Image (tube, rainbow, N blue to C red; front, side, top):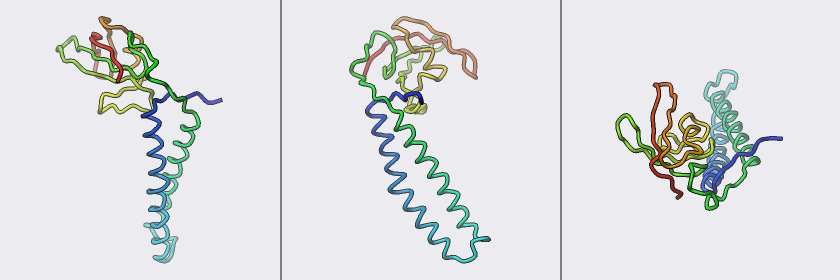
Length: 158
């Protein structure tokens, strides 16, 4: 049996929107492109046709992957998660002990991570190190660039 994918309602809605976009916007565009390129003549030497068919295979794999993930989703009620420790869906403010800079990370499941927005997976090195910690805890995290030292300053929910 497959492992559950824990997801918030917002994460599930984003996943659903992505699936709809791929199925009802991208798929019809690709079908039209394949039809257009098929009409160009000899398919054996038609690079545009082969590129469109390859894009179709990639798109169908992506759709299939999202549908599979959907089948494994376990919805998490974020309002029932305590905020005394850094759990899934917590907003955790950390202070970098080397320069005093404060950063707010949101801890999420791997399928909801958006690193460029500081929404990090609990399976990432930083997320895993923060998970389960309390305000005042100090942590050291080994990352490719070296070791980061943080202090947990605040934990909150949306």
